[in-house]
Length: 240
Image (cartoon, rainbow, N blue to C red; front, side, top):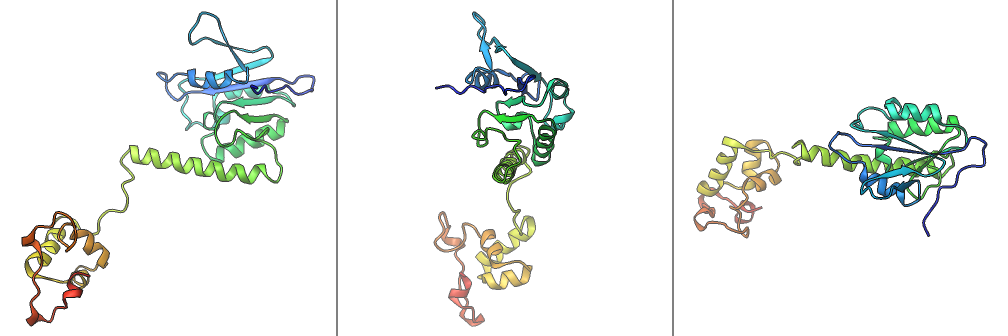
């Protein structure tokens, strides 16, 4: 059975729908399909992408509006504020269409609570809450955790797409890297000795020696270190 958001019994109660896309080429179609399931939007006959608000539903859309603009400062949200009354339900297809981060969701929750407006997210991890703006003992902390995790994941994806996240950079690069590899392969220097000489950890030396250590794949025979017993090198230490 499809869920229907029933309006409140308040005299001025209404169901309010908000949608947003960040750039002009993006389409609202996916959000409209989600909003169609609980019959907040109704398909219009003969138009492939046509939807209209159901009876009693007020639709507000921000097109080409970046999420960097706080929710309460967006043009369509300002119109929502003008139209909303106590007992209304504000519905969004996904939380990030309305709120960017924890600061934003707190601001929207405060706004909804001050006006007596319920907040309903239709899809995603917070869609099970009948009113995401409720101030009960369970809704607020769970909302904080899930929203923070979602924001962290989006930040990682954004950073990786922009080339800002590639893990910890190697401790040895360029000439120092070549010096370490040469000292190990050509002169039999131990990992411990190289770590002390370059002021880095043994793990950093092992990373620098990728492909040269015994047991590693594609290790050239000629690159295996020779142990000079006259120097007192320990064969175990040389490969540790």
